[in-house]
Image (tube, rainbow, N blue to C red; front, side, top):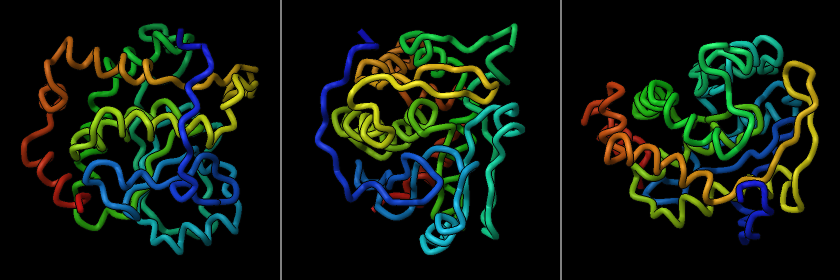
Length: 242
């Protein structure tokens, strides 16, 4: 069941960085051939503190890939405190929760296959950007860095040769990063509605990849169907691999 408490994965404290005002900030490297210090993942920067901005500056941050919806960006825009990175808005999901054509699923079990079905253009655009010289170091973030960011980073790590077990273990670290090891916690979303943030579990990410395999056979074929070229995938390897 997706709402059960997740298995307690051993945490790797070195993966997490203390960036005041940003939740769940950690290095995505060290998984597959993805090298450390070039790709980070996190929650949004809308409460970034000045001290946090200084720490991001020390990392040499050059690019932020924001996976949130336009409505989220309007309500909770990232703050910079003088940082000069480039920001790309690449929404993973349709415009907002109230989109009548493709409303976001409320349940986790439905959300992850839905993300796989809708995220292709965002994933391809993110891969192209990450493969572009001068982009790194980069951060990929959504609201809390758990679901949309989790899928995007898992795709990148998988393309760079990471095993399913290693990708999943890194995905599950968001439970520790967000204080979800002991179960769901309430939060107020961008519409002012109280919702419940639930722990993630391995089968959620697996369901996204199962959708991709069922509809396209392989991850590269899925990305090709959304416009990625072999050159795009090769550039990702060149720019991010050890």
